[in-house]
Image 1: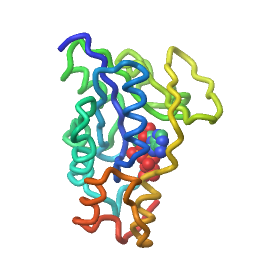
Image 2 (image 1 turned 120 degrees about the vertical axis):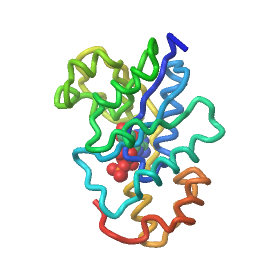
Image 3 (image 1 turned 180 degrees about the vertical axis):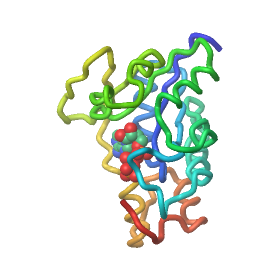
Image 4 (image 1 turned 135 degrees about the vertical axis):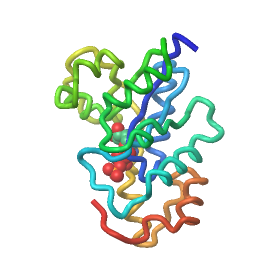
Length: 196
Ligand code: ATP
């Protein structure tokens, strides 16, 4: 379909949690997007992924999380490409897969305010409109060129917190979608090993 408005939410998703789900859903509604594609990174340049879930497990959890919400889907372009994940490659691949679509790249407002430090910023801005997500009440960052800002409710959960809870035996239910909690338990994920 052409002229589709597609949101792109990249991340490590190790694991996907309700903060991610709220961001995807809120941006989809606020910008009247047709859908939002979650794109788990293979490896991010600034993150050490040792001792965490495998790429296949991160994808599987994302797929479980979006089941039943037909606005949300999951792409494996970054994991299939392998190596370090750069947003410019993610957007290039998705643009090729969805000719004619308008892409909206979703990230934290702080990250979007530092877009000039990303790889190939000029090309990035040709490929997508950048959407900075700002948690309600947090300072408004100084965003340079034409970026959009969407305010979302504060959901105080991170993947780091979910992994920490697993190591200490605290519950993760209600912080991640139910099928993801079941998958984490079934595969005995995040019970040990190093963490950032
Ligand atoms: P970690 O704790 O392992 O660093 P994370 O919870 O920040 O992970 P990522 O997969 O790195 O999750 O995040 C992907 C995207 O989702 C990023 O743009 C990040 O800013 C955003 N994000 C993550 N958690 C939240 C949250 N609770 N509320 C709003 N945005 C979030």
